[in-house]
Structures are given as C-alpha cells and as structure tokens.
Amino acid sequence: MQKVFGDYIEDFPPELDSLEIIFTPTSHSIRKRWSNNRLSAQFVADYCSTFLPVDDDDPDGTRRIKESKGAITYIANELLENAMKFNDRDSNFKVKFGIYFIEDIELENGSVTAVLFVTNGVNPDGVDKFQAFLTELLASDPEELYVTQVEKSMEEEHSEASGLGFLTMINDYSAKLGWKFQNLSTEPQIYTVTTMVQVRV
Amino acid sequence: MTIEEIKDNDYTVQYDSESSTVNFVGLLSLGGTKEYAPIADLLNKIAAAQPDQMTLNLRKLEFLNSSGISMLSKFVLGLRKKKSIQLVVLGSNEVPWQGKSLKNLQKFLPSLKLEIE
Image (cartoon, rainbow over all chains, first blue to last red; front, side, top):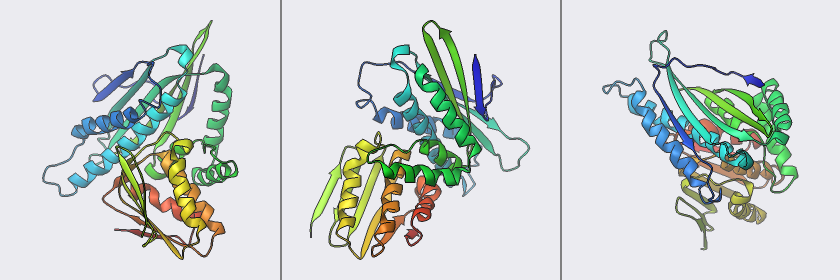
C-alpha cells in the first residue's frame, strides 16, 4: 500500500548531482545527538553549493551562494529534526536523507531546483492523524494556517504548534512539499513516510 | 545595570536592562517548546515589567529553526495585550533566514518596528 500527498517526484534520472546519507537508530538519547541535525544540514548545504551555476566574475554570485546555503540548511535541518523526532523506534528503521539537483535549462539565469527528502519510520497509530493534518495543510491558505497554528499553541502552555516547519518552508522559501506513505510489512505493521521539499536555489 | 544571560556552546541570549535590549548571538536550533522555555520566560519576564520600549536584536543570530521562530511568534502575539510596549526587532540582510522569515512577526503585531539593515 502506498499513498501520496502534495507534489512528489517518484524517480530521478541517475545522472543528476545528488547526495544521500543514512542515519542508523542509536542508543544515545535524541537530546544528546540533537545538534547533529543542524551540523548535518550545514554539511549538506556546503557540499551542494559547489553545484550551483555561479560565475566567479558575477558580483551577485557570492550573495546567491549565501542565500542558497541558508535555504538548504534551514530546510534540511527541519526535515532531519522531524525525522529524528518521529522515527518509530520500534521499527528499527534507518532514517534516510537525500538531496538532488535539477537544473532548469529553459531559464536563462541558471535556475536550479534542489529536491530534499527524508524517509523515516512512523508509528502505525499516528498515520491517520498525520494524513488528516496533511490534507488540511494542502487545502489551506498557508499564511492563514500559520497564524492559526501559533494562536492555537498560545492556548495551552508548552504545547507545540504543529506544522510550522512545513508552513515556513512554503511561506518563506516558496517551497513545494509532498509526502509518500508506504506500508512495508503488515506483521508487524511497519509504515514509512518520505517527506519531499522542492525549492529554487 | 543588570545583565542576564542564557548560553550554551552555540548561542548566547543576553538581556541588557539599561537599554531594555535582548541580544541574540550564534546558532539556535533547540528541540522544541520545552527547550526554548528559559528564553521565552526571560522575554515574558521583561515584558511583564511593562517597559516603554523593548528591543530584540537578532542581527548576530545566524541560524534559527522553526521551533525558535515559533517561540518568537508566540511572544510577539502575546504583546498584543500589552499595548504600551513598543517592540523593536533588529535584523540583518546579511543573514539569510532573517530576510525570509522576520517580516512574519509583523503579522502578529502590526505596531512592531522592524529595522532590517
């Protein structure tokens, strides 16, 4: 069984520039390794900046690289934070992160779309709730939903405003988001979700 | 003058009572509402004293995750009820996340003065 929400790319041509990293489940507490999310995201952004079609003579080039690295670091960090937070410990599933680069040859300014994704195990009991939230998110005006979610989280002290990571990617970085759920086995029930973000860099 | 400080390896949040300014420096990517509580509590404590003006200086904050943006959004939204406080947010165009996300804070509090340079 599989189910797709939003904008999702199934297959990439093998010749694209890409990077994939696998994180194994670990006995260390999530708290102890939390800063690894940002460190990994910064590494990915640095690594990828070499693929940007920027001229050395272009005075705007340095700025573009800085902006692109900022966008990739922010989004990669959000994806990794979510994956580490929600990865179902019981499934022993490894978190897989990847980034692909698609150059848009039709546009003159050397426009590149970075496609970032992360796959993690999800608790079978949480799948319906997550999918209902995604349906709401995709049908909403994301600017309005951002305000609603923050207001909602004010009502209860210490509650998390859900989906703000996704909403900031959509609102602030003009990113397109998609999700694919897969049921890998029924006995025991193992579900995975892949979250995919497409952003112009 | 009192200085209050919350810091870790990657960041410093420092309150200078004389100028009613909170300076954020470094990289902030804490795990969620609970982890951001000490910073949120500091901001709320300052606002509770009803200063005429309160400044959040973010110019040297190079990274902030969505949980941090959420913490700031909640604080700013809470100031709607404290109309006597003029909130000033200092940002920088040299820091990519600020150019993208700081303008959102004004949605929660239209009187907010956003100074990006």
